[in-house]
Figure 1 (cartoon, rainbow, N blue to C red):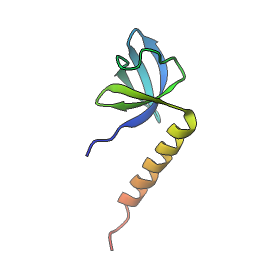
Figure 2 (figure 1 turned 90 degrees about the horizontal axis):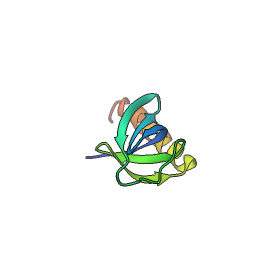
Figure 3 (figure 1 turned 180 degrees about the vertical axis):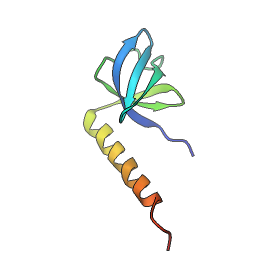
Figure 4 (figure 1 turned 90 degrees about the vertical axis):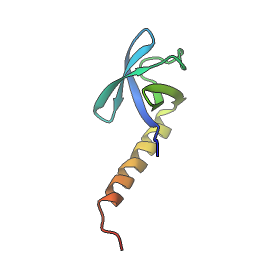
Length: 77
């Protein structure tokens, strides 16, 4: 299974951005979203930003990922 993860664009250098994923930063290619600006939230898959999202949607997605991680740690019935 592959996941696309939301992150916040911290800075841009041409079509490469430094993106924050809840404290972890990675370089991400912006080839598909050249209109992205610092402060925008993007969905990233396989090192490429594939979609812009608003902050509320990004935060909700991250919250759901956290809930899934918590459930993974619980014993199965």
